Structures are given as C-alpha cells and as structure tokens.
Length: 165
Picture 1 (cartoon, rainbow, N blue to C red):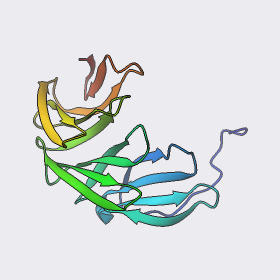
Picture 2 (cartoon, one colour):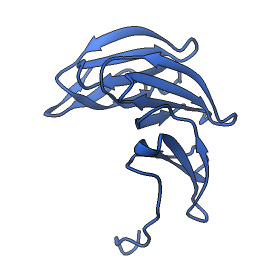
Picture 3 (cartoon, rainbow, N blue to C red):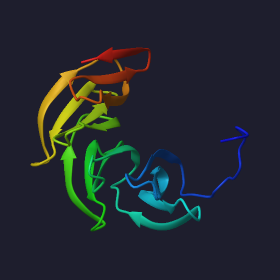
Picture 4 (cartoon, helix red, strand yellow):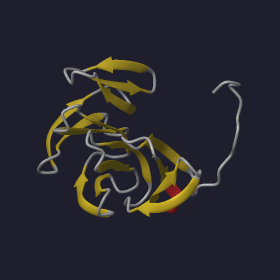
C-alpha cells in the first residue's frame, strides 16, 4: 500500500467476479464464474489452496458474520447457493428472481439478501431455514446490496441510482 502500485498479478479461475477476505484475514475467496467454483487463496503465499462448490455461474457472494457460510448468487440458474465453508458442502439452493447479482447478510446473520437484476427485486432469505420470506421491489437492475452496521437499513445500488430500503 505504500507505493499505491500493482505489486503482483495472480492467475485464478475463469471470469473472476466477487472477492471477499475471510473473517480471520488469512484467506481470500474468489468467485470464478466460468469455472463454476469459489476458489480459496492463502493470503500468506498468494496461492490457491482449495475450492468450494458454488453452483453454476457464481456471480457475487457474501460471508455470514461468523465466517462459516457463503451465500452465492447463481446468475444463470436464478438461484442462491448456501455453502458450508468448513464442510466444503452445499447446504441449500434457494430459487430467486431472474439474474441474481448482489448478496448481503445482515449483521446479526439472520437474513441474507439477494438482488435480481431482471426481476428488480431484493429477496429476503431466512438463514436458519434457507427459505425466502419476502420480496422487495426496487428500481431497475439492482446490482449490489449492503446493510448498515446496525442492520436497520439495507442499501441497494441499481444501474442508475442508489436506494435505501
């Protein structure tokens, strides 16, 4: 960070999309969309050390607050895949709207949100049951969502706007 210049380029899977650092800061999760996987990179060595199942065409994802689950948007199949990281296994797949993209998990870990670009929706998933409990209509083509730290607001970004719901 001292020089603000690129220090390394690392080969990863095809069409990388989302990335997120593990809660303990030792690993980087990489959504390799055309490789249909989430790769795990060791940040001490900058090497890929494993893969997690992701469902087909993973786009973006979010980690649960405890760092044990990934909630993944599968754009081609209109699904959200829930992955148990320690067990490297799929716990559930939840049908959502067309072209799911953005994913967020509430700070308390009780809700996962997935936005669907074509459906113009934010889908609310109960993380205990992995069932959709509500749909919120948002503006056209929502791409990303995030909760405020207190969990009282959900912000979503549409192609041409930012909205708070």
